[in-house]
Length: 302
Image (tube, rainbow, N blue to C red; front, side):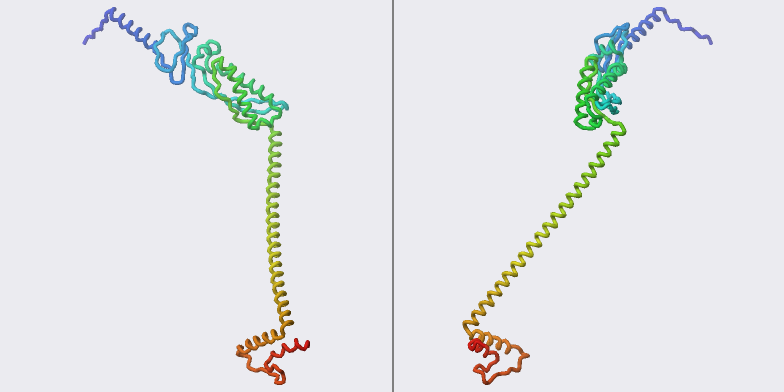
């Protein structure tokens, strides 16, 4: 069975080639910029001033593009920072920054891509600012003070912003992440803290002792007050008894019949007692009843 070759007219081949070239040109003319990025075009090595935001763009197919990530990023840096006492403290900081989209052509023209921007501008300036700010600290241990850290963060942020913004980088924050003092200073600080804790412990013990002493004094004062009140009560009772005895003596002295009246009351009480059955009476006495002659003694003065 014979095969027949398919002959394509030269004109049709030309049309297909043209259509292919047109499709390729259209495909090359479509540019997609991902979210959070900006594109910068170059034509034969010349940087174009126009920037391309995220989305789909129809561009010159001869353009080449460099894309910059304009989202917030963090750069961490660790450096030894000398203070005025000539001691070096290791400080780790974080710089939160982002690329300024409108300055992307300038960045590409003067510096390069993002990593070059960081290596050429951000890192050297950050290290320089760290050293400069460290020289404002009198003693290394002052790095641990909150007010010192706040001041350093603000000063470094201001210096970095002033330097980097004209170069296309917006500094959003500078944060001190960690501070490592020289070992002997760390030991000295720990020893100082231990002494302070011991002092605080002694203060607490002293306050407890003072409280106990105050409670003891208050208890003693209460007991003394109670004793004084009891003594006063007994004095009042003694005075009352003395007064009663005095009045009885006055009554006896002024009225001999008072004793006989008391004797009569005593006889009446004796009579009520069932065990009292035998009484001795003096028949020769003017008052033969028992005890009734007692009043006569006051009359005779015997």
